Length: 526
Ligand code: NDP
Image (cartoon, rainbow, N blue to C red; front, top):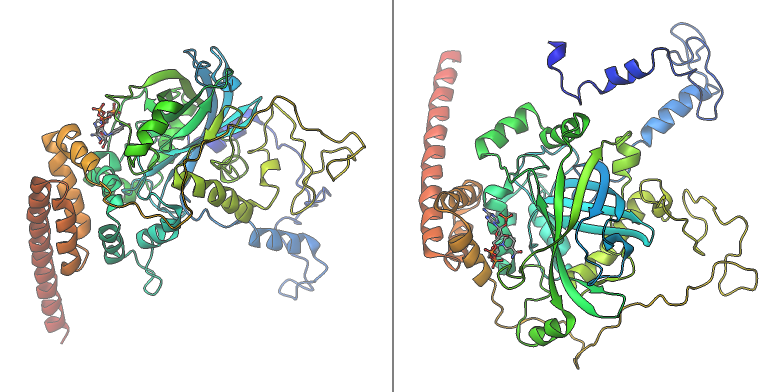
């Protein structure tokens, strides 16, 4: 039976094979070796007796254990990570001056996959958007591309992020997932409908992390060496092919192997079946984009895509994952991604959601890991030493060799580099206000997705998956949801209504059968 064990299950046996004798003596945190029984027995007044406060070994063990957990990520808590490299196969330097995109360049990367609405412990196969974040450790600095497995997001404005996540999570009174909260929010924010179609389509249950695409979602602004600028959307196409689970398979795995995606990734890399993706980009020259933006609301809107028919994908290079973490906590849990981590040549666009994420992600890492989270091994760049005037705070490591902590100074502390140019943006004449876009079109792209991208069977699956979730909501909300999807397509509306009626009939039958058998049991016991 042991021979059937997979790579992940063999992890400890492999350690033992690599270390045929113990790796040394166990010590206290301060390095003093522990004598016989000191790791298993506390210092007490007798065999049953009182434990002494002077047992610093015991106190250290218990106190450290109490502090093992750090705050879980407020979104995307459950995840898995792996490491590898990104190699540029096509010359992309004409669009962007970062050295990461020079032809032939190889850059070390750390990738974290996750489930967006998850908590630590959520089954990997629950229907959810999957996070797909890449950290490039380049000589220009760390670049984080913080993406997902869908090309759009639920909302456009960061003001709505906390409410979106609240609606997807637990009812604050019952502590239960609440379909009413979810569908109420969705019907009141129709910009979510495009993402909802992706979520409830077959791709809402990817078969592990290797068989899904990744998307940068937002538009980024690229600048080349000549100062020419372009807007760009990044895509990662899986080289393993798209593969999804059926709802029945996902349900089975959630009960039998709730860490299915994590195990699959670890085993594939451990067995040298290294997964890879092709990084591609859609490009719009800045002048064209700014002209378009005058009439089209959706160029910098995270709920919309750029049509690939108009802006075809341009290949850049290959991302390969070839190393598993040596320590999950220090290499993956402490990975801290933020869209604020950019390098020269890659800048933000006027996408409001991206602008909000720049603050929210860095801030959440400071909360989780402390103000010096960028000094942690997982986040610091082995290719270059950072030189800042930031000092002190939790877990600060002073790498300044006694340099001054104020700028400017006359003591040869680090100086600004001439020639580094931040991109400058033209802001059309405007007024500050809490701008609401009028007559917004939330449905055209959703219609194209439903009618032209999904095949007949996928359309039916979409309706079935929505109905399956919707049956848990109250009937007045079900009517509102049906009205929402009617705006996408009449057939989708009809199919959801049909499947909803079927689910409700099946649930009614089950409840009647349960009540009857309960009555019989009660009668017997009386
Ligand atoms: P295209 O026909 O050029 O592109 C359609 C896209 O849909 C392809 O990128 C394809 O990605 C993706 N796709 C194919 N099958 C599915 C599926 N079952 N589930 C999810 N995505 C799928 O048309 P447009 O670019 O004009 O886009 C049309 C619609 O397609 C959009 O309104 C949007 O809803 C959806 N879409 C668009 C994307 C984009 O970036 N433009 C990306 C993904 C979806 P793949 O090759 O990986 O199958």
